[in-house]
Image 1 (tube, rainbow, N blue to C red):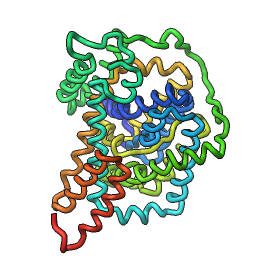
Image 2: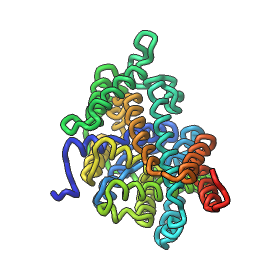
Image 3: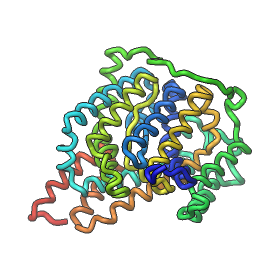
Image 4: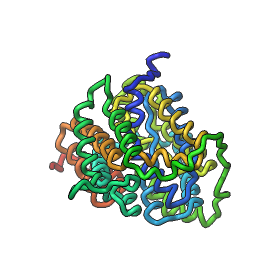
Length: 399
């Protein structure tokens, strides 16, 4: 194998780095919205493998968070979610195929890109802490700090905080250790803890077999589904996708991998996500994207080549094909607070990209985007941040 693909413990650890973002939203949309587990994880696995092979570097695969959060909170139908993925796929294919995204990207100031990365990082860190203290949306819905552990407290302290603190200390101790990678130690420790103290939900139904995905398992969405999906899901998601999953992601990939990342262009990222969402539409999965946060997570925990994509992709493909609908019982073994540790360190890695902002005006723009994002959402922060950045180009204005 060339250096483009490495298959070692660091790549394995890095491949697991973004599970904190992926699994909670994926499992939530399966349990609450009725999405197909096999179709979802098969699509995710194939997206990891194919995008890694094509781009030749570590490539993240993430759920579209605006759609995921809204879907879980409101319990909308699987058909409406599928329709949103198809519509966003069409949009991305058009702006990527026509190269309009490259033109758009040229006019996005670096301070805005850094602001999006900083905001995404802070959101990941905050969500990581929520996983540890048991206040994420998924944990609230399940009414448990650790929904799949039999122990919820150790004395007056919640089990999530205990696991989070120990996991955080372990991560700090092993973060730069190549012999015992932090991400691998944390996830394996979580699996062992789940095996010992877990509820083992669904493990008794686990059967090895060959499972084939159904095409359009929810039938073709109706016109009403498409209309709802356009207004409630696709339009709110698009600005965040452009800001984080295209522009901020491609720029971060260049920062991390330099000339090795030449294929990761705005155009290629759009087309890649479009094809993934068409596949997800036909197999009953969730809308998918790349993302700066996901890349930071993989990189922070050791991923440096496309080998990490092959590893995590094969894990999901094997689980989907051989365990089908019951593969969730394996994923339940990883405690939520372990995912929180991964999110916390991934968010910190991404937030640190802002340190190259030297000019006061540029740093001001990035911080304004952070404030707007925390007060509303990343899409608003991205769009208003662009307006602020161009306004501050005037020499008459100072900050």
